[in-house]
Amino acid sequence: MTILMEDAWVLVEQARLNRKILVFLSQIKIEDECWIWTGTKNKLGYGVLNSRTGQSAYRFSYWFFKGEIPKGYHVHHTCENTSCVRPTHLKAVTPRQHHNLHSILRLAHAPYWYSI
Image 1 (cartoon, rainbow, N blue to C red):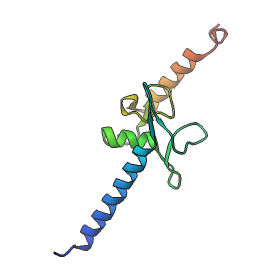
Image 2 (image 1 turned 180 degrees about the vertical axis):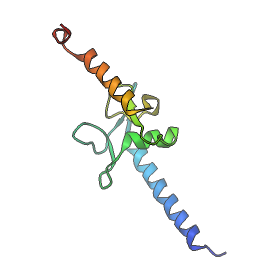
Image 3 (image 1 turned 30 degrees about the vertical axis):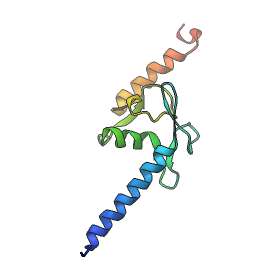
Image 4 (image 1 turned 135 degrees about the horizontal axis):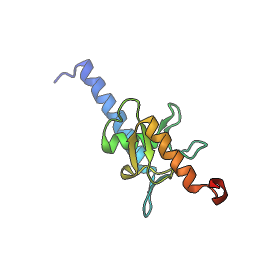
């Protein structure tokens, strides 16, 4: 049996993906509601799957469990927890929708005197 060079590259890429999946799954702590990323986090509290490339854990989670993120879309945490990677708490939204959602959340969490 001969393995063609292109087949070998497919096997290498599959092995890399399998390793990334294992690393990803090993860095999750399942709590009551959220799946908390326990690995490296950036200064805003977002999980970082690969610090060399800057790949975010929550975007990987969305891709792994739900599929491709539409081009130009953001991934929004419906639970408002930046460390969460639970796929049911992640929603693909347009940049405008994402901005509007965060504007609403800022007002909801603002002190009572802010709205006066």
